[in-house]
Image (cartoon, rainbow, N blue to C red; front, side, top):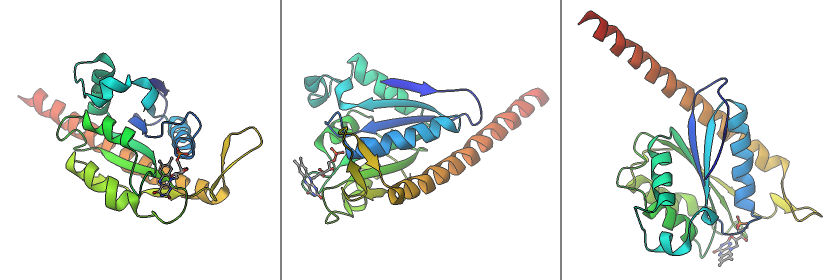
Length: 205
Ligand SMILES: Cc1cc2nc3c(=O)[nH]c(=O)nc-3n(C[C@H](O)[C@H](O)[C@H](O)COP(=O)(O)O)c2cc1C
């Protein structure tokens, strides 16, 4: 896991899951963009990618392994998740499914989720709605923002082999980041006011 963040501005805990096995990847490039924007707004981001886990540990779903415990704990305390996946055989990646499979039932209850996908064409544009969304719903994620799908046309490779996000996809990601920040700031301010009310009630007892 990689942890980045600061303490200014909003206090939001975000977990990101990168479902691409590639070190350099279109879906991870989108995720990195979202991650850095969120940190800029004051969020703390815990990032997980497939390389953080031993393959056997993940495939066998060893719940007590420290890397899996760390993932489960980070998800348990997160306000939101941002999940990125490549499109493989008209669905999301098996690697991402393995990370989701080690989460307990209801792990995404009360969390806001933003999903991102990169496909080789626009043929599987609905993969987030038809394949990933039901899986996240079964984990309790009732609040899912509209997902973002990108094709190679939106994210080109530059001369250095780095993926570069085009203007159009950056615009769509910016809108999603704004929406996520707004949703979370409403939730966190509601949480704080409930907390204050509870404290008030305690003082009256
Ligand atoms: C095994 C495999 C299966 C794929 N299946 C699809 C597919 O069904 N539909 C599609 O649009 N692209 C498909 N692709 C292309 C990838 O989605 C595309 O290269 C994407 O950029 C990969 O994401 P990444 O760069 O984040 O790893 C497939 C690629 C691989 C390696």
